[in-house]
View 1 (cartoon, helix red, strand yellow):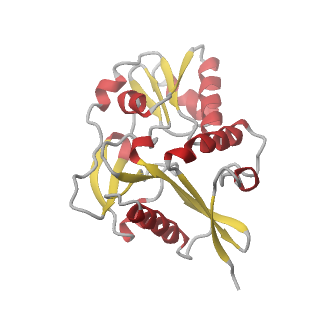
View 2: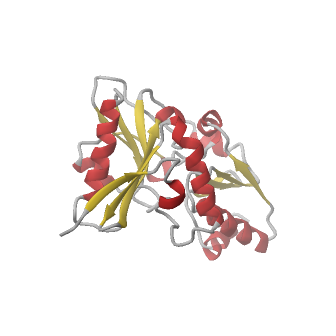
Length: 252
C-alpha cells in the first residue's frame, strides 16, 4: 500500500529535506543558491511543499504572496504559484498540490491563486491541470505566456504589463536577467556566457534584487531568467551552449 505524505520545507528541516530540483547534485552552485534563497524567503510567506510517495519525492509545489513573487504580474491579495512538478503522473498528485495552495490561500483570506503557464517550455507548469482545477485564463503576453487565476471573490483580475517591446529597446548589448529562485539559472547563465564567448560577444548579468526592479525591467512574465541581445529576446529558459550559439549567430 502506498504511503503519501506532504512535507513543507521550513528553516528547521531544509538542510535535511532540501529542494526537489537538482537534489541529485546537492553540492552544485544552483542547489546551494536555491536553498539559501528559500531560507531568505520563508519569512515572506513563501511555501515549498514536497509530496512524498513511500518516502521518496514524487512532486512539489512552490507559491508565495504576489508582493514577493518572482513572476511579472500585477495584482493584489493573491498567492502566486511559482513551480509545480510531479515525477509520477496519473495519480492526481498535481491536483493534490494545487489544492494545498488553494486551501492556504483561503485560510489567508486571499482573493485567489495565480499561475503563469507557457506551452512552449517545461520551465512553467502545464496549463491543462490548472484548467481542470477551475483556473481561468485572464491575460496573455508575447512568447506564449498565459495568466491563469482561480478567484474566490469578486475582485479585480490580475494582469500582465503591456510594455514588453519597450523593455527590449533598453538593452542592445547581450544582457542576462536572473534571480536565484530557480536552481537551474546558474547553468543556464553559464551556457549563454560560454556560447557568447565563442562568438566574441561580451555579456552583462543583471541580478534582479527586488520586485520593483523585476516588474520594471524583466523581459518576460517568467521573471527569474531572460536573455536579451540587440533588443531581441534570445531565451527565457535554459539553452545548451550549441543552441545559444545558434540563436546569437542569427543576430551577429
